[in-house]
Image (cartoon, rainbow over all chains, first blue to last red):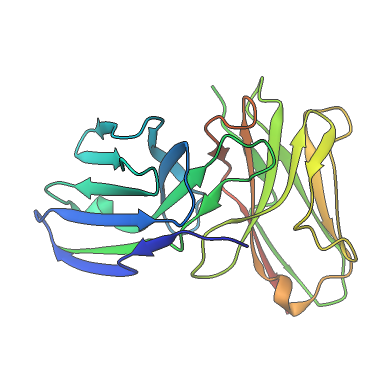
Length: 112
Length: 113
């Protein structure tokens, strides 16, 4: 099935550093979602974006809906060990017949 | 408020055996999804229900997979017979309607040996 291009695939960072990851698509989306998945768990919603240009924060997390509606990024500031996990972007169009499309994920490792 | 509940959490079966997964969506969510997540990949949609109607099952391998949502609430996903390549996480999710934010359960982790 169709997937988004998410990068980087993996990251190793020092505790306290900022992190940035992004997602691009050839298709226009009307909603961008960012999820985090811990080992052995299902994806948990972090941030939802509904409008082009929208910038939304959730604690140390900030995400933006690209102006072109074909991309989005997620930033994590001052990373901590519990930020470890896999982060997925997902895009949704307004068409009822188009399912939520996921990226392949960014695996984040935080070194204390 | 309870989230999406799935069972079993983990299942190990021999190939050619049947397996079934159960899902209870968030109360009031009329849209229910089954996704499959292979190792190192993002989730991919298998089937989507609006109430009791399957409105998108184009990605469901119908030769061995089946799903039902008889009363428009709980749902089951069945694989019969299972193959080695079916080893994956089967995620159930729900939303208030198509186009709204989707919330996932913890997943049912299947290993076929």
